[in-house]
Length: 128
Image (cartoon, rainbow, N blue to C red; front, side):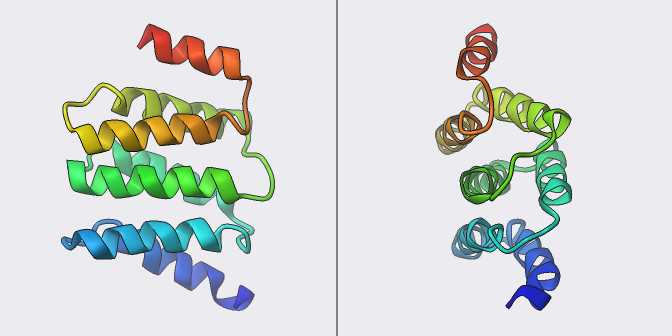
């Protein structure tokens, strides 16, 4: 399976923008599982974080779920800069009016806690 990880990762990232909710959620679940085999986690998290800025609520929800799964299952930490961007995107999405997106953003904040200083993370949530 490992030789096919880059192609599968690309396919699953595209699935996050599919019009069908089931396809989006299965893409998110697949990315979460696939990250354990991936060697290019930084670019994946950067791409997912960047796509959040202009995503409609359904796509944002799936992307947040995917990011949370990636952070929970990745074998090694991200760079501080990438993790800071992920945290900032998660905190920003906590403030949207869509309840599903809020819950997914909260899940991503929780996943960030695995890799960063929790009091600092809580401060950023409280100041948002």
